[in-house]
Amino acid sequence: MLVTISGPPGSGKSTVASTLADHLSYEHISGGDIFRGLAEDRDLTLAEFNELAEEDPQIDKDLDRRLRETARGRDDIVLESRLAGWMAGEYADIKIWLDAPMSVRARRIAEREDKTPAAARAETEAREESETQRYEEYYAIDFDDITIYDLSVNTARWGPDAVTDIVLDAVDAYQAERDEGPTPIENVRYQF
Image (cartoon, rainbow, N blue to C red; front, side, top):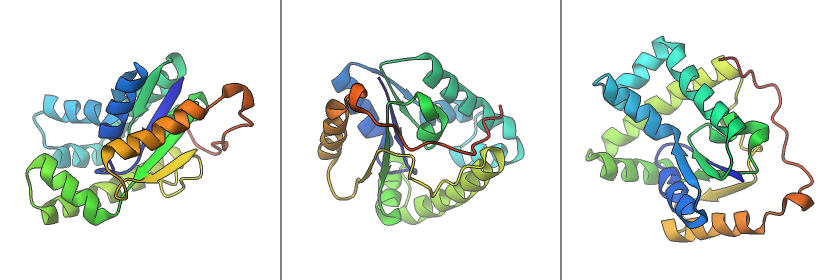
């Protein structure tokens, strides 16, 4: 089974995906970890690397191609990234969307990255605006359209363990033979 976990920065994607993968004994593949690793390889901050990605479309496309190829060729994984649901597309068995209000996400990011909530919020808003424009330009993806997801959870309402339990309940209840079909992903240009 291929489960995707998507959502904006600070929504709890990595926490839930890691715990879910452990519980299911699946491999956890994180697009964010790959992106952060690429930034570190170039000795750039995440904000600096994001700015570079604005100038060099190949950075996003290489990452997204890896995610799509992983989804196409693998099983028993939890694929986690902002675009995991879109990139996995028809290969995903279950697509999960996690979100939380910006104030909550900024606080989480600030704690994780040891910065002020105001700085985290400003960087996150700039990053989201940049990425949203790039996704639209590259792939015709409307990032605000969450209708492709099978389950959406506001992670500000429950703690990480409870959110994982909600997602795990959905995964455990899934029966492929009774699946009448996911919401189709239409008009996306997978051009890598």
